[in-house]
Structures are given as C-alpha cells and as structure tokens.
Length: 85
Image (cartoon, rainbow, N blue to C red; front, side, top):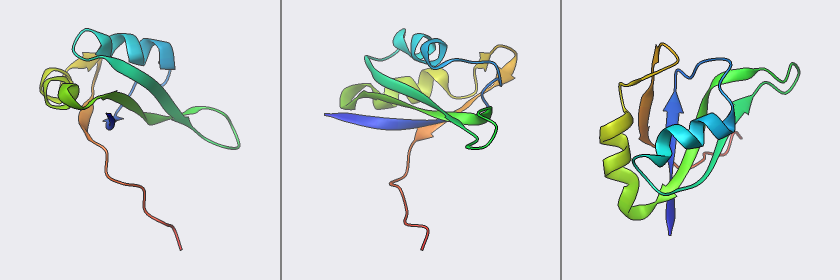
C-alpha cells in the first residue's frame, strides 16, 4: 500500500520529476504531482508525493524543513480529501 505526503512551499519552477527525485533518496516514490492553477497553468506552490507505507515517517523526518532550490519545504502526511459542498 501507499500513502500520500503533502509538500508545501515548493519553488515555483519545480517539476514533478524533480520533486519525485528529491524524495527518492529517502523513500520509494510511487508518484508525485504538483498542483497548478486551472486558468494559468502555473504552480500553486504545493504538491503531493505518494510513497510506500513504511517510508512515510522516514521521508517526513528527512525532508520536512529542508531546502529545495532555496525554499524551506513543509512535509507531512496528507489529510483525506474533503468535499467542498
């Protein structure tokens, strides 16, 4: 099984491949996605990385507060998606 990590304060120029690569040193990455603005297509500055269950704690501890391209990122386990209605 896998779990999803929230990654905040990402550099605007970061790609999904770069995000996955940054986490691959600390976890087995299943997938990574950066959330973009629907109208402009620009990064919204946060994303999600899907990792194996056993890699959640080591990845959060290793990556939370570290710098990616000069920005201190925030990493924690993602909360389940809430309905907007």
